[in-house]
Length: 112
Length: 115
Image 1 (cartoon, rainbow over the protein chains, first blue to last red):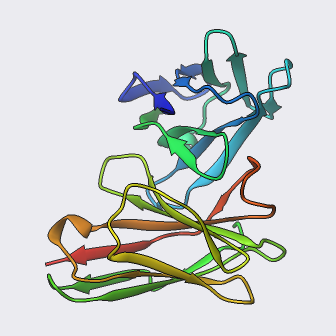
Image 2 (image 1 turned 90 degrees about the vertical axis):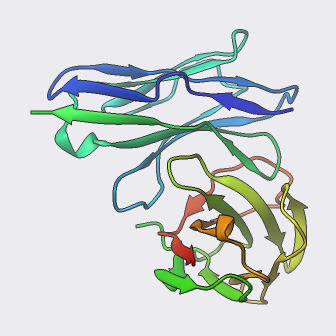
């Protein structure tokens, strides 16, 4: 079975600081992608960053970067220089075929 | 903005009724997936349509059904509504065969409340 686990239900960070959200997954697939999605109170699911499993280099998108450890099946998200607009629910997700499997989410609150 | 649109935004129904939710995929995308997101939880896969054919289904009963049209827009139909069907329904589109992993882009969702 394919599962995604986010062990941190809630996180808080001060504005301008760095925070890391954790995610582990389980799959027997060889060809898969991993994603972090952000869902603000407006509820639109927004893609933050994606990582192809065959790439060893960690993905980076501006202030967002991942630490992808394939052997450990770990995929954490680091947010640098946190901004108030980063406040949202963050979902780690995996796709190894035609369906996304999501974790339960981590609520991130950025405080001023 | 992803270019994926959904209608209606909100919907209130009573138990036993039927509902149809609609999704227009992003331009160039031929694959649409539907997800159910209960309050405080991650989305759960309902099913996917690729070129008008169902291309995979999650653990949902047959009263959840769908269609995809030649323009790749899609409908989700739910019959005999139950209270537990109250949720945010998300559609996501992508381009490709559906069997290869790829990025899915989400619409804003339809909030369904069943009373």
